[in-house]
Length: 430
Image 1 (cartoon, rainbow, N blue to C red):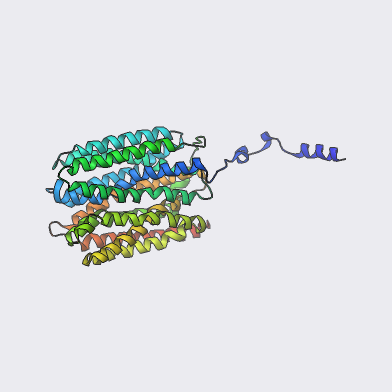
Image 2: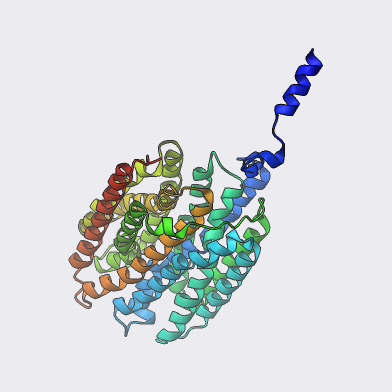
C-alpha cells in the first residue's frame, strides 16, 4: 500500500521541464560571513579608501592650491578639479556597473587601479601654477580611475551577503572616511616640509595607495556567475517616485560637499589654530566612519527611507550651523564631528534608498547607475558655484553656506514627495 502511494506521489510530482520558472529552484545561497566574505569586505574597504577617500581629501588640496600652488586662480576655478573628479567617480558607475554585471569585475578593478595610480603619480610631477597639468591628472585621470574602482568594490558584497548586506556595504564604505583621515594627515604634514613639499607628499600617498589597491585586487573575487538580464528600461523611466528620489539625492549632493571641500580654507580664514587647520578635514572624516556603518545596520532592520529623512534634515540644519562654527576652535571641532557623521550616513544610505525601488535584483545596478549620473551632475557644479559665491579675496562665507543649506532642504522635499508618490501608488516602502 505504501509502495503504491509512493508511486502515485512520484507521478504527481512535476518534472524540472514542467516548472514555469526553473531559476527559482536554483536561487544562490549566501554565506553572510566566513573568511572569503570578510576578505572581500576588507578589499572593498581598501578600494573605497583609495577612491572615495581621495575625493573627501580634496579640501586639503583646495586650501593648498588656493593659497600656494595655484594662487593666481580663484577658488571657483580650482574647485572644478575636485568637482570633475567627484563627477567622474559617480558618472562612471553606469560603465563600471554594466561591466560588473557582465562578468568583467577583475578587468574593471585592475584597469581602474592602473589608471588611478598612474594619474596620481603624474600629479606629483605637476608644476606649480600649471593648472592644466593638475586638472588632467587629478580631475580627469584620477576621476576615471576612481569611477572604475568604486562601484565594483561596493557591488561585490552582493555575492557574499544577503541578510547582512547593508552592514557589509556600510563597512566597505567606511574605507572612504578612513582614507580621508589618513591622506590629509600625510599631505598637510609633508606639504610644509622643505625636503618633501607637494611632489613627495603626493608620491607618499601614491605609494600607500599602490599597496592598498594591490591587496584589494588580491582579496576580492567574484563568487556568483554573471547573469546579465534584460532590464525593463521603460518601466524605470516611467517610475516617477524613483526619479523624485534621484532628484532628492542630486539636490542633497549639490550642497552636501561644500562644507567638506571648503572646511580647511574656512578654518584658515577664520584664524583657527594651526594644529586645527591641518587636522579639521581628518576630524570631519573620522566622524564619518561610524556614520557610514551604524545607519546601514538600522536600514537593514527598518528600511533606508525610515533613516534617510532625519539624516537629510540634520544635514540641512548643520549646513547653516557651519557659519557660526568659525567663532571658536571648539565650535569648529563640534561641527566637523557632527557634519562628518551625518554626511557620511547620507552617502551610505543613498545606495539602498535607490535600490529599494527595484522590482527585481536585475534592476539594482541600472537604478544605482542612474542615481550616480544625476548625483554626479550636481556634484560637478556645486563646489564651483560656491567658489564663485565666496567672492575672493573678500571671502563672503554666508552665500555659499546659504546655497548649501537651501539645496539640501530642497532635496529633503524631494524625498518626502518620493515617499508620498510611492505610497500613493500602493507600493510599500521597505
